[in-house]
Length: 144
Image (cartoon, rainbow, N blue to C red; front, top):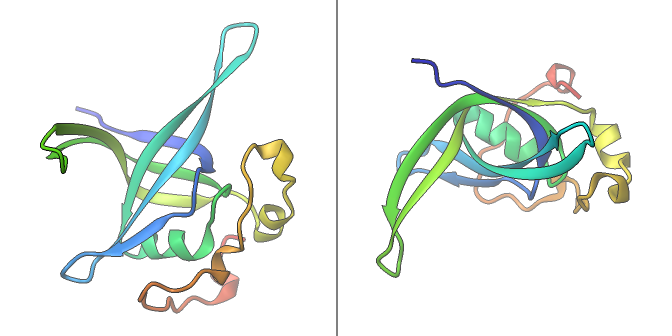
């Protein structure tokens, strides 16, 4: 059986970073994907919920923000849970094996928001840390 998903799109909002009880990092994010239909090129947008774990989660949180163009490689997962009001909820999401940053930091900061459909908030590195350990990365190793 094959279960592989590859997406390219923009973050709908800043990624949310959390830690498990054992200290493992997990980030939740939603990717907006444009869909083109028919010869008239009618566009619709899909909003795909995603999750990424460990160092990739910390990097996503630290180096991206709402509107960032990313590539996601992962697999579809369906899970169920009971909501606070007692309803059974089923969720289908992408669990990312890797996330690629697809634009340079300067082009991300200089992007005209009116063309992208997404507004830019403060740069990702201006966010308050939420008890996230610092990441020891040499800037030359970054893809942007």
